[in-house]
Structures are given as structure tokens and as C-alpha cells.
Amino acid sequence: MQRVTEARVSVEDRLVGEIKHGSVVLVGVAPGDVAAHAAWLADKVANLRIFNDVEGKMNHSLLDVGGAALVVSQFTLYGDARKGRRPSFVHAAAGPEAKDLYEAVARSLAGLGVPATTGEFGADMQVHLVNDGPVTILLDSDKTF
Image (cartoon, rainbow, N blue to C red; front, side, top):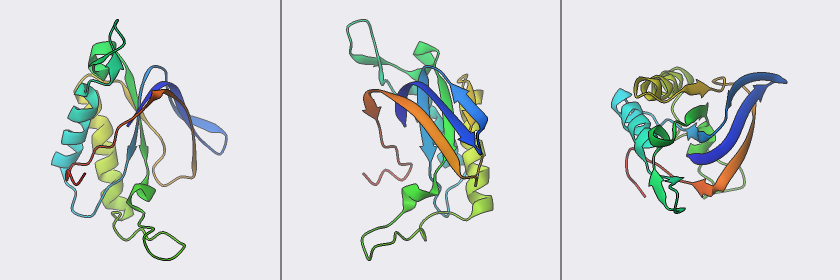
């Protein structure tokens, strides 16, 4: 997730999602991920205190600042480049499974009161954002790092 002052995603020069102040959430799905993982991620994104208070300390959450979320599917997060010169994506979930969980993240965020918009699953997207800080936080429902 990245803290942003603005972000938008386009497909073939067509705007499909846009937010102002908030977070861009790049979502990778692994085989075996379930709805509980999507709910965990949404709760973490909505409540993680990565926005500055009046003293410049990260004490406010996305909910506290009234920010929005732009949720973008990104299977390349599961790219494994340890061998050879071309990454392997065998650890990324297949399309239908990944799409369901990606959409569940956006729905869960909305259910928590965070305005959420998405990119277009499976499309070649252009993501434009202004990373605020920069602040980028890695979240993993399996807590492997």
C-alpha cells in the first residue's frame, strides 16, 4: 500500500479509477487465499496509522483522514526472479480465483467506510500516482516478512 496525494488508473487512455488523498493498494493473490485474507487486508489498510497528525507523526488511519483507496490487481507481486532472467509467476493465483479476492478487498474496504475504486482486472493498466512521503508499506496476510 502506498500513501498518495492523488492516483488514477487508465486502460487504453480510458480513466477507470481515480482518487485524491488516500492509498493505492496493489493486490497480489496467492493460490489458497480466501475471503478472510481479503477482509484482513481491508481492515489493515483502513486502520493502519500511516497518515500524519498535526505534529507530522504517523498517527492517523485512512478512516481518520477520510481518505479513499484505489485498489489495483498486480499478480507480478508474486514474481520470483531468483533464477534466470525472466520472473516466474507460479506463486500467483489463477485469474478467476484472483479476481474474486481482489474484488473482495474493494468490497471489504467499502464495507468499512472507505471509498474504494478499482482498476480493471486482467487489463494492461497505466497507474499514475503521487506517493506522499514517500510512504510504502508491505502487507502480507501470511505474515512472511
